[in-house]
Image 1: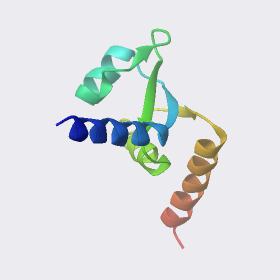
Image 2: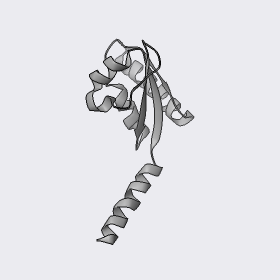
Image 3: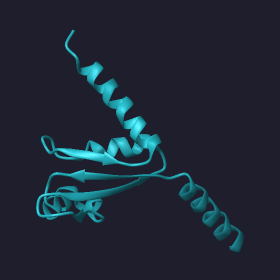
Image 4: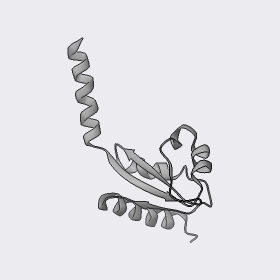
Length: 103
């Protein structure tokens, strides 16, 4: 019905207004990284022959952080984003370092 369709559109717009975004610069050629990610790599773009950018969008900053786990081990990367994203990533990096410290 029209009411059902309207409700679905309104819900989608509410979700969209709550999204957070970031861009991840990955030290890996675009083709290789896109292939590694499969369907999730569809938005990866080349920066140059050795680097690519992976735009991320999620409904919560925690979900952006989880996406970083998909980057292959040993591949360097950096995150670019609004202050709230960068603060969260930095705080979680500290927590991960503390959690993995030998003591």
